[in-house]
Image (cartoon, rainbow, N blue to C red):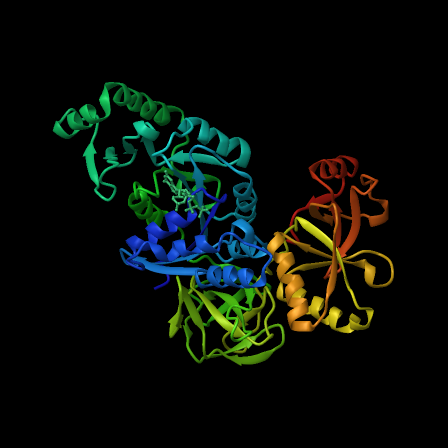
Amino acid sequence: MMESRKTFAIISHPDAGKTTLTEKLLYFGGAIHTAGMVKSKKSARQATSDWMEIEKQRGISVTSSVMQFSYNGYHINILDTPGHQDFSEDTYRTLTAADCAVMLIDAAKGVETQTIKLFEVCRMRGIPIFTFINKMDRDARDPLSLLEELEEVLGIRSCPMNWPIGSGIDFHGIYDREKQHVELFKRSEPNSRRILPVFTNDNGDQEVKSTIGDALYGKLEEDVELLDIAGDPFDKEKVDRGQLTPVFFGSALTNFGVQSFLEYFLDLAPAPAPRESDKGVITPDNNKFSGFIFKIQANMNPAHRDRIAFLRICSGTFTRGMTVQHVRTGKKIKLSQPQQFLAQERNIVEDAYPGDIIGLFDPGTFRIGDTLVEGNTAYTFAGVPHFSPEIFARVRAKDAMKYKQFHKGVEQLTEEGAVQLFTTAGPGADNMIIGVVGQLQLEVFDHRLRAEYGVEVEIHTLGYSLARWVKGDVKLEELNLIQYGGSLLARDREGRPVVLLENDYAERWAKEKNPDVEFVSTSYE
Ligand code: G4P
């Protein structure tokens, strides 16, 4: 059961084609038959400050939080990483629940900002990364320069598994380096798969030659030779450690190269990985159920103000109605109505296995990073870290009399992981700073304080754009930091020292002036 599970997330910059690729993958798995289902996300994309819109957007992105399908005997879980306007800390946290990632790149644009951020999180975890270079049916950049960019910008070596023949109007297909055949691209017949051997001089080869023309054929021959001599050889161990990314070219929209990508991917992607806990590594074949909460989603269903906690199963078997131990509180909990999510429907789960994600109704019991285990042996999985916010704001209750509710609200929303809370030295209410990764998170915070705690808040956005946790034996007040509003000393909720910085320049300054101190972008220990 477990070997056949593949749990991954797609990381990309908006518009690279994540929705399109997801849709095609689901299509192969037979999970959806109409193309419209995943796409419905699009209509929710024009986010506004209107709460109904937020609700709608979140509702929709939640129902597609995890998509499950099977293919060739594999059970595949795709974790959706919220992008666009709902890019938030959840996007990063989701990656902590994935065993590997598919990095999707627009062939005309190369590596873009959001991809870099998400890649960093994957790298931190050392998970395998598979690259799909999309939109080859449009004018694309030179494939070699794209590979160079992976190395220069992301610092990862690459090994092309296939190689494109032309691009845009001249796109003719891909050459499979292992199987030494060409899959011909026919714009007019997107779902046909015409696969022919090359460099053999037989009839199929001749057909390829006459289809793509002598010039492209000659170029392909040269490219393939160059890759064989000068490229990084495929090395499974390096792939497993996230040091080498297998690269595939294709066109998700025309469904070209997706199936062969899927087949290689399933073959190479890791089975559910063992996970560190405070009592040692827990392997998935451990027969006792365990898992951890990586995301909590509130207000999914406007009719019932419920929250759903998303749990990644790490070991054992989950069966509906089982009783587990909530390690942080020591309480026993019966998991009676867990859910799995597929496109628009929520299904009740009867059983689930390592690698699977289940959604648990949460009356306020869970926090991000909580561990659930079966039986009496208690251990805690290494926590889900905080990631550097990008927007910081001072917050206070408009009505000073509502101070108590305000505090309670901020406290609870922080616990849930909806925002991060930092405090600066000094007395009073003015020392609270909240940090969020995306603008929508701020709007949700504002709305929920009003709707759930009855507090109107004043939100004053500050000019900082990154937080760095300070590591090293140093007195905070002795740090040499850029002055005049470029930096601010604070502590996170657990009391760890953090500096808020205006921009990359302020960060470089801090690193240069304090060579003995480490400034890190997550709260990872
Ligand atoms: P996202 O989820 O990563 O944001 O991207 P999405 O799949 O929504 O794709 C963004 C745009 O890129 C869409 O066009 C989509 O059709 C197009 N696209 C995706 N893959 C390919 C590809 O392989 N080739 C080409 N040529 N285009 C691709 P749009 O005009 O924004 O939307 P739509 O009106 O076509 O739906």
